[in-house]
Image (cartoon, rainbow over all chains, first blue to last red; front, side, top):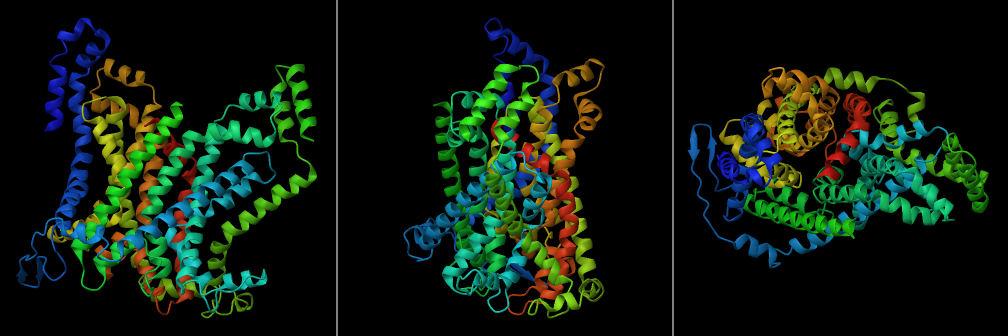
Length: 332
Length: 301
């Protein structure tokens, strides 16, 4: 295996470097036999990831270069086995999608970005606000905290069903509540704009508790002395928030924002289950759109795989860029 | 008002050094009546919004068949009818059992894989460990759609479609990367001296792991177990595509009530509550450690 080969390489020059870095080399030597155990211990996970992640990924990449769909992949119906007849088409699928020829990609991408940005902004913003409130000395704090994380404790598809019940256009309690406040009732699961607002609302509702709890943990790790020093210098509460709290939260908020973007970008349950199959597709993000491509009508496996690879590439690029820029801002 | 607060806390700091801490804290925490009301008001509104959908579905589940159309009927017809109906007249018990098998399998497999990998990476900076952790991180970015079609075709070739093991393996791919990060973070907090003492006493590295570290890491393992369990308990996409009616999990089964066209909300709501109870219970037990494990893994990367 490659890992084994690379150790031998690192280990062999060790005696030569002995004089330059003695502690590290002796540690290397002492742990030489440990390595084998290390590899033995990661072997199970390596096998599982190779078979179930890397192989399907490679397979997916290959499929995205073909014209595979339900009618030409290999299949076995009873005793009859039909061999695969799809063929290699090179980068045609990518060109078809990225050139805008399928007329779906860019509208879906735009909506996916709007969806991700608005969901993450609201989740992190509201979560942080609630965390700041809960971080103070408040009576019934334990009660508030327990109730506020309830949306996270419930499996997300159950939360979605609860909202679907409430948002029903004819009998839903949500319309009754907002009309009581003087707002107009909407066909929440029917018209495109209302659908979009509804899915964002539900996703924010589900996502706030995670952000709140994470930020709460971050707040408690900010040293009290910093606030005391700021108070001594006469900083107002707002100045303390901007100059002490926000920088102190940066490690947590960076992680939370990155995870939030990845999860929201890939969020399947909320949109798919809230709107079901009888939707115009206006509120579909890239992931749900690709899922429908793969599993409704004549399954377009190649098209779905192409979308999947493009989504993955977008996320990888974003994460790399994000981590680099946050590292820079942490160093500055 | 702010000025007064600062003054009092400033004198407190100057006045006493040993007993000052609680005083100073209170100095900053002092509030006028108005801001106290605003604070509680905001928290109460947030609490109502957070809890309402869950309470609503519980409320509807206790009513008659048409309660979702006439919620006011619920109070005069409170009953557990919907619960006894779904438990006796539908396949819910079977789905429940399926889900328990799948979630249990995912938990065992997830903990085993995550613990061994997490320990190896935490203790030994072996060549390949960085790449492995990187792979874990990237795997979390995989949209399920990238894997679901190839996995579907792979599973059908291996005859693992509509099979508990197939679904368990698929869930392991989503649960393990995150769990391995969490376990690595947890193992990092256990002093290395313990391993060394074990080695001095003649244990093999694997014996050290099994006899010394695993017992010490029980809290971390518990969190990993619960996380894997919850992942499997609430997953929809894989289960929908991989399983046929005999092997439906709860997440798929509930959709036979909550259909797109004419959802049966009485049964859906009762089923929803039945599904939620175990998950919420498990969740409340572990949520604190879940977040600290997550943020520790993220910030130390």
